[in-house]
Each structure stands twice: as C-alpha cells, then as structure tokens.
Length: 338
View: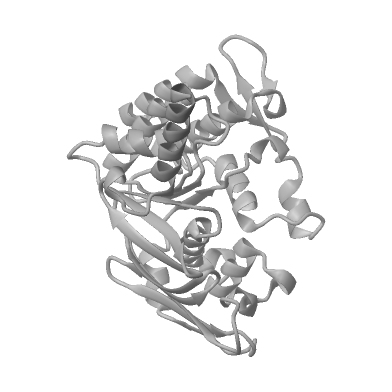
C-alpha cells in the first residue's frame, strides 16, 4: 500500500497541482511558502482519515486539526484571490482515491467521496508525521492541554507524542530492528524510556536524562530510535518528516540518510521536506538500485506554484538549494580574487 498521486485545485498556495509520487522516498525542496509542508500535512490527513472508525474523525476534520486555520474553518484553506471559488483535493493510492471539495464562502458545501473504500484499504495502516520542531521534551500533559484548547498546537504534535508512547510490538526485537537500533544508538549513545508520560534518554550505565537536558538534534535521532523500537515504522507504513536535518550535527547526516534508505528498502514509504544541500545530496549519492528516490522541486512563477520531479537532485532546473550554493561559491571566488 502506498500513496501514488495528489491532485489539488485552489488549495492554500496552489492554483492547480498534479503530483505523482515514488513508492519509496519523496523529497520536497523549494523556498519558504511554496507548500512543501502543506502537501505532507494533506497527505498525512488522508492517511489518518482512514482510521475514522477508531478515532471518530473524518478527512475534513483531520485537515482542520492539522492545518489549524482561523475559526477552525475548512473554507479558509481555499487559495486566497478575487471572488469565491471551490477547492478540490484528491489523494490516490494503489487502488483507491479519496476526494474532497469545499467552497470559500459556503461552509456547508463540503463533499467527500471514496471514504468507505479508502478506510477499507488503510484501516490497519500506520502513518506518522514528525514535525520540524522537537516536541517530546514537552510531552507531559501536552495532549490533555491541546484537547482542552489550553494551548494551540496542530495535531501533528499530539499525534507524534502518542505514536512514540505506544508499543505496537510483541516479543523480542528481530534482526532487522536490532540493526537499526544499534546504528541509531551509536549516535544517541543511549536508549529511550518513558516514565509518567515523560521521555528520558538513558546513556549506557548512567542514570536517565530528561529529554529537556539532551541536545535537540540528539532528541530527534532518539525519536526515530523510539519509533523503530515500538513498531511504528514497519513495512507498509508511511513516514512524513519535516526538515529532518534541523539541529542535527552534519556529521550524523550520512548515517541518518542510510537509515532512511534502508527503511524505504524494507517497505516504508517516506515523504521529506528539506532545505539542506548535504541531506539532499547524500540521498542522491548513497541511493542504490534497491532504492526508489524522487525529488520534487517547488517554485513560484508569477505567484503560481509550479513543480518538477526527477530522480536526480542535481538535474532539477529550479533547484533553490543548489542555486543558493552557487551564489555562495561566487561570493567566495569574488573575495579570493579581490
């Protein structure tokens, strides 16, 4: 099971978008405001809507709780422009499609199609969204505070705390899982434990450290360790990760890339948004014939977001990451030549 395509009309920053995905790793690049995170949040909402029977939330509701528009009104997610208009969303999987239409003015004009077959396909399916900001260090009572509207966090933060807290596994770790955990443990120098709804890192034989006392980059790696340990990232699941490179020591980027490539090879579909040259380039350099990696470059042309996709990071014509690295190189050469 995998997400294969997304079609949008008049949704947030997009006039029209028809984007096909790799069943392996999909990497979104582009300047701020081009909709990278919006695409991932929308896809994640579609995945979570498949769990409607257990969570009592449908596709439009999950979108609202993930995007958090003013007044929690879906119609505010229609692309802003002159006059009233309809927004259309259609998410495709291997076999089915889930579609949604809503209007910028008429709040009751909301139509969802394909939800029954969508739920049937993905009812036992696990999707996980890791936000750009690390949140486990603030996990104590956060979920209750969000549900009581005492704090304003979108659902991705609540959901990742829940995902990290629940143990889906039964029995001892298999060889595959042990290999992943060992690799990540070499970076974090410890293991994750949970006590009284709070996360800790236990380095070797030392006493447990509160997550607040651990560097944020290490906390992000520790979160990945926990998601693998508790069975969240198994074959057939989908991982969404917004800016995985943020606050991580550059020397750990190659190991993180190898981990994601191996997860993809083992059947996890992955969606990533990044601004980092080294992260994207390592993905290109270290992928093999066993890895399916597709880069999607988003860019604005006369206030319209356009895109291009390619399996090679360096072959993208509108590549904002490479463009900026070239500008830096020019400045460096100019300074040397003065």
